[in-house]
Figure 1 (cartoon, rainbow, N blue to C red):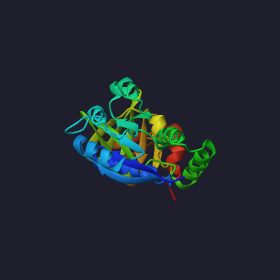
Figure 2 (tube, one colour):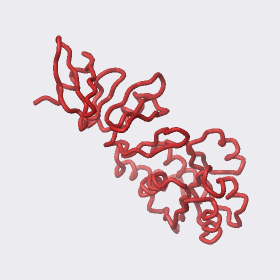
Figure 3 (cartoon, rainbow, N blue to C red):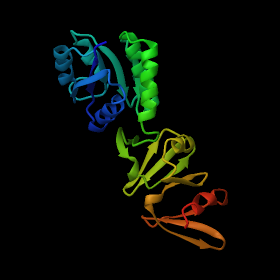
Figure 4 (tube, rainbow, N blue to C red):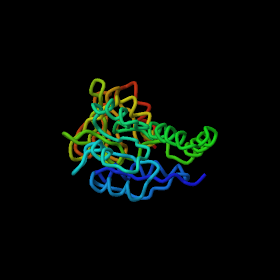
Amino acid sequence: MHPGTVLIIDDEDAARVLIRQYLKAYPELEVIGECRDGLEAVAAINRMEPDLVFLDIQMPCLSGFQVIRQLVHIPQIVFTTAYDQYALKAFDTNAVDYLLKPYTRERFRRAVDKAMLQNGYSRARITALAECAGEAAPAFYERIFLEAGQKMISLAIDEIMYLEAEKDYTRVYTGEGFYLSNFGIGVLQQRLNPSIFFRIHRSFIVNIHHIRELYRAKSETYLVMKNDLSLKVSRGYAENIRKLMY
């Protein structure tokens, strides 16, 4: 079967880069272009006639829904957005799927699977692609989308200094401040490289590259981060720190 053609439409550079990275696991899908606003999107879709479009909803010029109303060529649509209130409206347009940012590689894969099934690929072929993707893809996050006011920012994992549990959410700290993740700290821990990120307390995970020093005081162990913050190591997680000592 010929490669399915894909168009990526999002006004955020980081969001388009992430989709391109995830699509590398699918040689049957060929990215033929990108757009940064709704007007570009309408012109590109009608001109290039892609099979599949990853479409943001809130964009300059025209929203994702306004784009759809102006199309002559109707491709498969996977919406990608940071706003969950549009989900029902999205499926009313017969969208293949609705990806809520920040989404995982696995969630992205499920959306692509749906699109490929509708486009005539066999379940066996899709399964084989998924297995190959699982072998080739990194097991851990490379970037993460986090809330910053009314928008989402794409943060490289190595910029994270430490993470702090905040009820069902997680505060993610960098040298510039902190951002909020919708995921709990336990969920994030499963997707962070354990050779770099160490749990030191039920509420804290630290990036080893941002530890400046370690000291003991009154039988307690403390880490000092590069921003001079001192974090106490819980006794239940002391073994994680001993792994760093030679």
